[in-house]
Amino acid sequence: MAPIVTSLASIVKQFGIGAVLAAPGGETITYAGASGGVISDYVDPTPGIRYRAHIFTSTGTFTVTDPALTSVQYLVVAGGGGGGEFGGGGGGGYRSGTLSVTPGPYTFTVGSGGSGDGNGTPSTINSTIVVATGGGAGGDGYNPTITPAPGQPGGSGGGGGYDPGQPPGSSVSSPDGISPTSQGNAGGNGTAPNPSYANGAGGGGAGGAGSSAPGAGAPNAPGGPGGVGRQSLIAGPPALTQPVGTPGPNPGGGYFAGGGGGLAAGGGTQGSGGAGGGGGALPSTGTSGTYSTGGGGGAQRASGGSGIIVVRYQIAQLTATQKATGGAVSYYGGKTIHTFTSSGTFTAPGTFNETVEYVVVGGGGSGGLKQYISGGGGAGAYRTGTTPVSGPQSVTVQVGAGGVVSQLGPAVTPASADGTPSYFGAPITAPSGGGGGTYPTPGAGRGGGSGGGGAGHESSGGAGGAATGSTSFPGTIGATPPSSWWGHVGGTGGTQPAYPAGGGGGAGGAGGSGTSSAPGGAGGVGIQLPATFRDPNSAVGAPGPTSAPVPNGFDTTGKFWVAGGGGGASYDTPGGAGGAGGGGSGAKGNNPESNGGNGLENTGSGGGGNERSPSPTNQFGKGGSGIVLIAYPT
Image 1 (cartoon, rainbow, N blue to C red):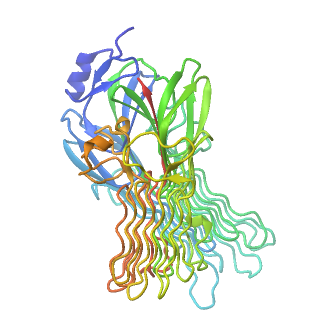
Image 2 (image 1 turned 90 degrees about the vertical axis):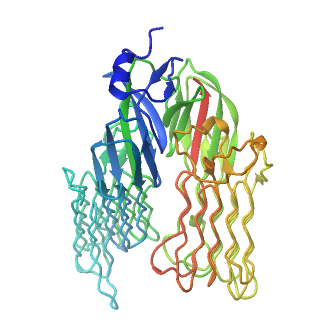
Image 3 (image 1 turned 135 degrees about the vertical axis):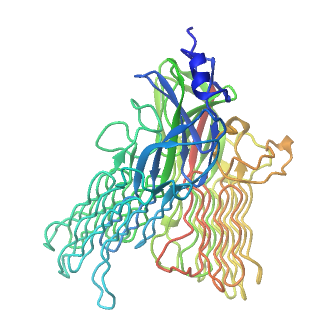
């Protein structure tokens, strides 16, 4: 077989001597060194170039270790705007280009999606070097007691609401000064006043403006669709479906920052979300923007999707191909690893015949609603093992979304607080985590892969949610039971004077219970990934314990942990800590107030419980999305 590197000398000259990468043909190549994020190694066959991409779905550090690496291409997408009552949220700002780099750390801040009526937050490289502005919130509707809010400006502007044909939000220029400074497009215009037939406009997208609400308040007029996002082929082979983003008008996926759809209140068709993760409008609660896309939230105050940062650089000139496709592909320890941070397809050709190792983690549950002393969300279920895969075969992979509650809602926590399942084909499913309980009684956490924590109460705290179908983690990393998964119950809520809520269960341990004047219950601990997936250059998972003894299968790096439970809220003591593995911390409700923390994306961790946050119209304590990992011999 011909060497995979066509000119090793030229690679050494161009990039310097760095780490060694095992290539698909069994050869090794020398490449410029950097670490951080989820690694995706792939070949662009037309020029015969192997690229390495680093994918950040949550805030982290990209560290350049080789002085020969002097520039990277980047994609920076901010969090999408939340939907308004009538107008769809605007997509997060979209920035791409080439950046000069030198050895050392770079802080990559990934923006969160805005809650209902709230703008998304920025995504940045080192705060100011590259800045993508959060998407603008959608506009509201007529209310005789308040001044109606128009669509808000942002990376892409929010759609206009109703009465009196509210104007849309505009797209603002990026403040970083890198040309071009354009980040997106404006939202559409809402309708003129008509109490019976009100319509909202779509939020703007990175690739096109949001559509205005047609019909000027006519019966059965539709809501305005969100603007289309933009495509980026930075994270995977251009001839295949990208491992990040969503489908769009062109093949290959990789669309980001679509606008949210506007509301049709007079019986017409609801506005659809724009390609690129935008959420659609619904008569009750709109659809949230897709996580890790910067999509705007749909009308009826749905949340925007979180943002993403990807950087890539060339590592070799070569001609090899990999055994299978799907997700972000990397090579470590003699194994080929496929990392799915969003849903996709694992495609094995006819030549493929391997026993693959897998980890599947469901989406985490949300902390309880914003009404008082809520329990932490439970982590998504954790499954690991091996299974034979023979080609030709296409295996559907679903990465579950984290739970989110987008409005104050009733006292009983709704099912939307639960995450959604992840699976590697239908037989290998990891259920979602249960949502945290909410005051008043019964205030119980919801059941799930791990259960949500119970709410606090004056006299009788809510019960922790059950770990439905789960088996308690035995303490040694290995295959989960064939008909079960690892997860634990949520903690019980406490009583006055602090009313501390229980923490959500984690894959590795139960959620802590609230006790009288003590802090909120801590989220249950997660689990560290098996050694196969602990590539030191990768940042899969979240921080965790460093003192676990090596014989049980953990290492002492304190990295690669997933599926921690969310901490419970408390009235006037600190909220409970999030469980190791990415769980969100619980809120503190008094002197000073705080918000429930979000579960970390792509860990399946639970969100922290809420306690009358300083921004009562906003949603905090969202569950983290899940993850699916596949490995086989290179």
